[in-house]
Image (tube, rainbow over the protein chains, first blue to last red):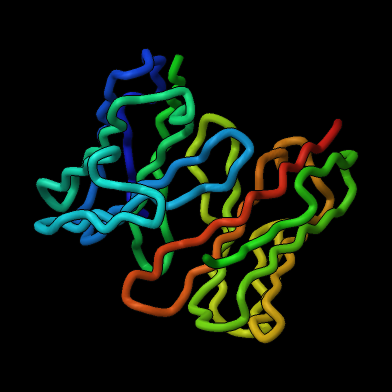
Length: 112
Length: 113
């Protein structure tokens, strides 16, 4: 199964700043997914990132707020821009392999 | 918007008790139903991927059933142990090229010693 790492594991940020989360996979994958879980909510898909093309965003998420890079088949970044306290969440990246989705350990973000 | 619901939201059981949770999902455009176990500060761990109506899967003391026609799945834990304490998530995967997962809000299980 794919092994996924994320950096940072957690951060506390000030309102109005931006944070870039990195996701590294130990194998080449076509699609990578970015999710978030706000407190008390379910995991929600933010966007799907394919290598070589622009990410596809779900309803309610826009590129200006959550720009995504996918420079190669093993790496992706998600930036949370101009943060507000409502962005406090756990952010996870995931990949699909043999019909299963594997998740990174998540980045716990707190915005003050 | 796909509606995936889980019940109960949280559950406390005594060690040794058996328990079960429910996941309901759309009965159309079904591709797969996933169950995950998510412990705090760890990655969600895939338990089962279920694709066929009537599927039953088992992993140790945990098993799951699937009814795609009526849109529900049950997860059973036999003889709960404190290490089973976690949030159990189900996720619906619709047919189509994207096939991303739509998650329920989870059932938070606490097993008391």
